[in-house]
Amino acid sequence: MDRHRRRCLYGLLAGSVLAGVPWPGLARAAARDGTRLDVRDFGARGDGRQDDTRALQAAVDALPETGGTVFVPAGNYLINPLRSVRLRSRMHLSMDADARLVAMSNAAPRAYVLLLQQVEDVEVSGGRIIGDRERHLGTTGEWGHGVMVRGGERIRLHDLHITRCWGDGISVGGLSGVRGHAPLPSRDVLIQDVVCQGNRRQGLTIGRSRQVRVRRCSFLDTGGILPGCGIDIEPDPGGDARDILIEDCLAQRNHGAGIQLYERVHDVTIRRCRILDNRGDGIHLRAAQGGVIEGNEIRGNGLRGVAIRAASRDFHLRDNRIGGNSGAVAARRREGGERGWMNVDVARGADGIRIDASSRPGRR
Image (tube, rainbow, N blue to C red; front, side, top):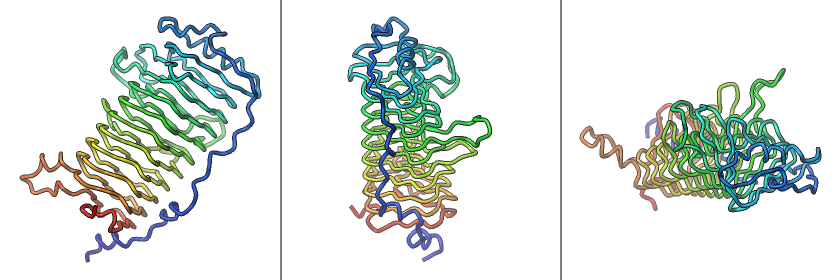
């Protein structure tokens, strides 16, 4: 057995301890006031014609210091993403299932429908966010997001449907430029029962952050500008992403990887997910450190099922169902003799990669 195979099969795994430790629950939120405000009482119409940004913002700003709930009834609410609806600490933005926040057309490379910046104890639930992808007036930029979380703590996003954004459906990251401080990461973020579909850059980006949990979500049909992933964990320089759980999710038909871990990423668990029919790799790791990939179905992806690139280390693959990947590679390079059927590919520069027999292609 050569040195490379020995590392793959018998390498030590610091991150494997993650699977045996219960994932911490969302930190207990500060008690919210019982105040409940309806955006219609602040002039919102939800008729798809009036700009309702100021009305929604007025409702948010009218909450007492102790917080409360802003309710958005059914309707189509035009939102100017150049202004954003800026949420505040200790609040719940509760949307009716038939409420739609619709991004107004704009040419800006960077704009957000909802902005959660340096806030704590915020919940957003229900309804839909619809981007301006088909109506965007510019051709540059990739940061037209549905929900932007920057330097937030104890954030819960659930039961949302986010589509057709110029950039990401959701972006969770750090906040730079806080005077006298290093970049402020987001902490204790739960994203649950959310669908992100047809967004241009990513379904979900996780940047500089700690303790992010993504559960029972779907990331579908992302594409239009690179990377085009369902989920991309890719923190900017000057910070990292740590303690990430992706569980019981679906990543399908994305133009890039289904799930990508790209540099400065530590301690990630990907568990019981279905990663299907993406044009890129099912799961792509580059310089990621420590984690578990277990109990997933990884099939029909155009490149590798799991690609572990150089400088990645200490990952454990077990109980995965991996097969039918690399079809695009086989079709393109068959004459050159490339092993296009390969479903798991570990680069020589990766170390401490343990692949149980239960995760070897063809076993199940």
